[in-house]
Image 1 (tube, rainbow, N blue to C red):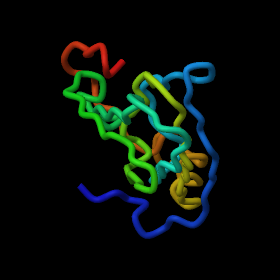
Image 2: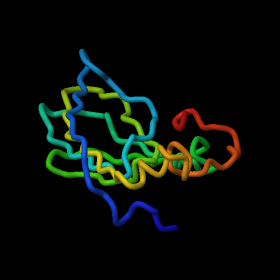
Image 3: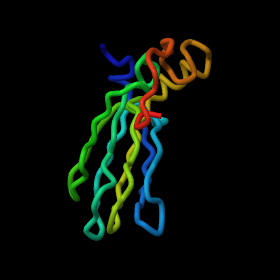
Image 4: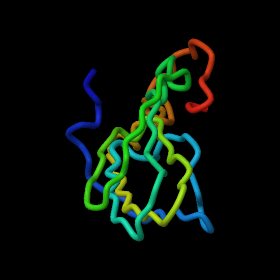
Length: 137
């Protein structure tokens, strides 16, 4: 299905996340406050684990019931996904990992929600179907 914001991305928000055994070791499953997210692995020391795990899309009936899949980060590579795609970082086993996160947003899409023309998250929510899987909670 087509994304209704596809031709109106007009601003961004960027930040860096840092995972290490003595810092944040993982990130719970969530969806982003963006229409599209770019996640760039900028590396650090050699690291193990901390894969990027994906589940369903927020608003879909199966967004918490799996199946999930994981992407291994490699320094210098990027992953792009819809902001409503549920995702999280698995536990880092060793080393450190840093990622540059860029959220692309649409002012028109966000304004439509602010004025009640669509749901606050921008997407109609289907009733949840199936039991949630532990990795997708």
